[in-house]
Image (cartoon, rainbow, N blue to C red; front, side, top):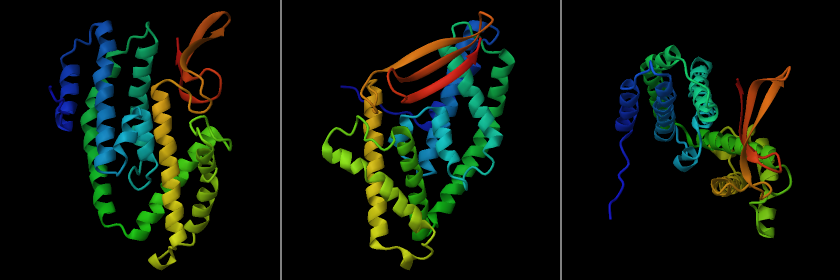
Length: 279
């Protein structure tokens, strides 16, 4: 039985660029293909920096696309001091990839592809530098700072869950016990929020503070794992219906001017992705 060995990051990144550089961009059909190695380069680089230097969860990152991975790092203010400088670049390659995937008549511009390729070395150097700086900084961080940062992170995770599912336990909470545990998320979140402004030294942290944080981590991670599994099998974690891909055209004077692409539940408002592309 053969064992699949995961390639080293440098080998993968170099491989993506080698493929792109070997393509003939004069051919409009090859230009559609050329978007893939560029997108894979950015997605892989963000993944590697996020977990190696910034403490992000590898399994969670694997289930996210490029924009979602980048957004997770944007939530760390001390890491990305000027996110707008590179966010447009991330959005550009993401949008180009989505258009290729969902519009058979879209052919990327040769100059736009070449410009993305030219910007890779500068982006890579900058991104690795800020990632390593963040890693060095967090190695010396105090216990209190770690507690506050972790609390803030999971408060935002709880906010997203509450926004996504509301007060009613979602479909993925299958038993009465799990429904009761879901209902603890909001009070745990509120307790942590209240205490954050009151904690300044190690002596300020009480046992209940640690218990609340541990419980919130446990519940948010449980929901995230369940959601990932259900989405993989195209089952809506909110209501149990099917997750489907849909497209609808937007018309102006009977002429199509844009296409709305959506991946989400066929019955409720649970949505994984929604993009609007000009025709």
